[in-house]
Length: 121
Image (cartoon, rainbow, N blue to C red):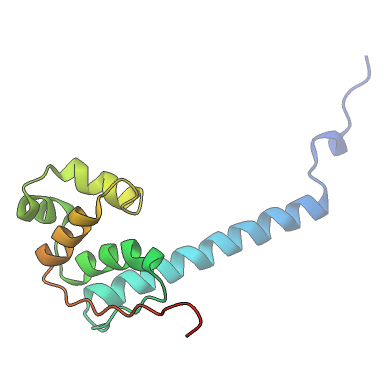
């Protein structure tokens, strides 16, 4: 039998480059998330701006972090189990009712200013 050549197990240089680029991109994303988390925890950010109602769930998660509350502490304020807050945040509040979102806003003691722009405005 022929011995497998050394090149048979080698990864093509273009594939290696693509893998390195993907890892760099992930690393950059993680660094940005850590920087954002640290900014929230240090309270360097005092206002969270959203451009749409769809961005509200992420802002609620950021607000919880910025206020220094753990998921358990927020759950306690709401009379829920910590796992429920974990599930809400993991799904970006997809399963939460509007009333529950309002409860979270109150529990975090947030001031939310809304603007509704009518069609054709």
